[in-house]
Image (cartoon, rainbow, N blue to C red; front, top):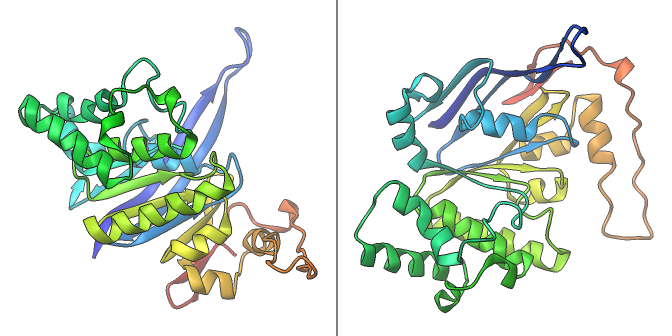
Length: 292
């Protein structure tokens, strides 16, 4: 059953070059449609600037889309008035890419994690304090450190704190925007394992934005590949990795390093001139679609 249903989502930005120059339209996201089933992890991949993060922010309505629909639990998020959107956001949260930049350096960790509870006025002061301790313990941070500032923690610990804040309101849908890309390699596996553990314990549904294709192959049930604001291939992760149909997907997968340094993967070059930028997704297999 689809928990999130995104239909023909687009986001255009107006770029102004000067007082006497006609502005241009940047089509950051163009006609994106996807569904995410309850309990699944859906991967959204593509190079920097392909529109992944803009899509995620538009889904949460952190930025207002130009057009399209986002259905969550049977309600169109983009049509909700402010009061109802505020209540809906309790169930849809995001973990940002940069754990240092996403945490207020002037707030103590306990205040950061408690802030969503304060905004939504959930529980008494004592209940909020207990909830903060519970959340920090859940993500592997000692609650006794709640009076410290973010600068006193490592990058991995800061990401755990950001995750605790995202979980404060007990969401069912969580967007993880490049959750490990800013971390040391030694810490990345710990955060990935934590995300998987939390999903199993709390019944979370994930939209995972990543450029690490090995991570996507490991944790995602379904995936979509974005190029210049459009989805060019989508399907079950195993099917896309086993038989990529779009030339851009083929080029991406051919760039994944092999575990054995003595072996080299045959790289597939990508030339935009060989693809039809206006092509729409069509079935190329069971539950597998490509814009070819």
